[in-house]
Length: 291
Image (tube, rainbow, N blue to C red; front, side):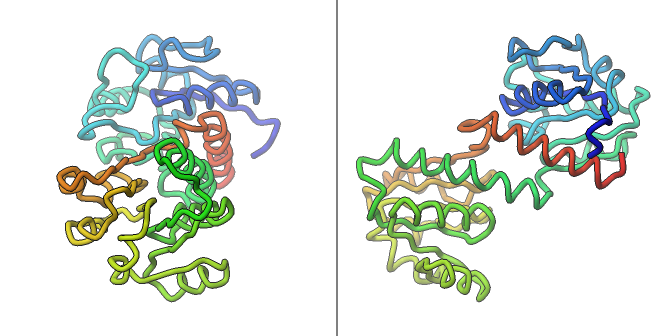
């Protein structure tokens, strides 16, 4: 992005990542307004309502993920009132806002209402960069929750995508005894090149009885009743996959297997660093769109 070019941003809702993002954009010389980030950060230009937020911006940045719960409402934990996605759609449609709407998992209700959208969670650059704070957060949870040292700990990582590969390498570097469950020949080759042990998903049942730390990164049901029945009762299962996760949590609870569905870790463990990543990706988007 042209270092001399400035924009009018509205940051609407979100968690501490968006609070920090508003500060970073302001420090870069942009005009920044916020809505639904009540009593947070060093924000000075707060909008009184949605219409004002869109009227004062060329670029509106929403939360990541954009909605909470069943998808009806904006993800705005710092705002005392619920904001319906349908209301946001009406405001965009009725206003003169024809700019860029950026967020994570932007709902379909906001498409075709007059704004050009860019979904952060569909971007490779964000996924790659975000895998680092996600992996570090996953390690932090294990260190806080387990009564063991990580060094030498029998650990399973399911999935060799961006998060899985970064996590497996991190756990290996801190001394864990890591096995990666993967599917493709490419993933097995990467594991071999990295010095990581690997197995197919069908062989997991042989490894799980010994594993005390298990991570899932696959957004599909992996830990069904059959695999959960194979798990060590002392193990901790940390599911990093997006909702609804890759674990039968109800059955795990019946089996008294400890599970943690760890979502949005970058915003929880490293909001300032996560905001820097989002800022970088936003600038990439603006460059790609020649804005």
